[in-house]
Length: 388
Ligand code: HEM
Image (cartoon, rainbow, N blue to C red; front, top):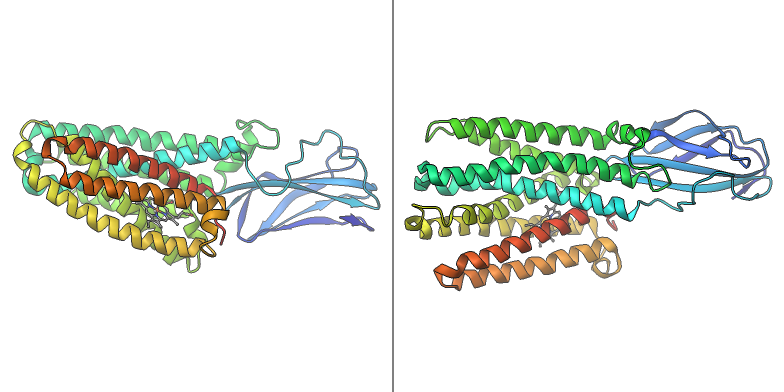
């Protein structure tokens, strides 16, 4: 773009509200010196910064923001005053349009997958204990209790570790232009944005969960005063997760957030239930309860799968523009892969129901491994831009 007159400011318009990362916008003049003056101003999805662009030649605008749904975005574009000139000296390799590094995307997927796995194995296994084991009185057996609490306790660590990985992923995604992911301006900018607010809420949720399960573990048998608040906390964490997914950008957002919350909670109940069964299956004293455990866990799994299919379909309708997206966009292809693995999991679940009792745990282990890969694909899905 060649302008005949020097502009007084540069304005960027995004299709959703954004937070600036650091100064947000830098403008390099033809001599490589900074041409912007004053801090950039942001109002909803509009970012503007004053520029002193009196020298003829090309200017490079470098921008870095975090969207309301916590997704990082950055990019560059150029404009010229009077005539184009060679690229401003010292400019970083042109980034082109909005984008993020492959390394950042992989880390984002890893952080989300860790969080989802921690969610399922923490809140889901706790729900399994409360709904399946407690009514059968098996939970009163200390040998069973020890296995269940060990699993839930270890998972708090996974929930806590997922957050620094998410911060590293965010910083890496915002550093594709040259500065390293540990650039304090980028790290602070990421923390001082919608992403930082979600990170703080998730960390708070993990610590509160830790406190509540500590109290539930020490409570007398039958005292569920801390278990139910811990399970409600699970719903609240799923709601917070919707703020870091595309759900927050849907209209109306309460519907998007509600559907996303139910989807994640159902995922937790299914995956947590399966891991719960595997954790206690071989515990001494449990063999006599095997049929009841299987039938109760299967009922939870069936309800969860139905809820996942309904809510998943609603979200797919919200984020896709048509069936073609399933093959032509990265988001759609990831969703297709996820659906493919889910069909494989359901086939395994049917096969395990017909397998001899002594071989069932093998089928369940395979099912659990595939479900973890569904979570990895969900992590990637949430990190990619949706077509709609
Ligand atoms: C018909 C089946 C399903 C469909 C169509 C579906 C579709 C979707 C869609 C469109 C999203 C939204 C991603 C975004 O924010 O852009 C999503 C999120 C997710 N899905 Fe599914 N899904 C299905 C089943 C499952 C199953 C079986 C699981 C795991 C057991 C699962 C786990 C997740 C998770 C963990 C998320 C992320 C939720 C969050 O960000 O808080 N989904 N799914």
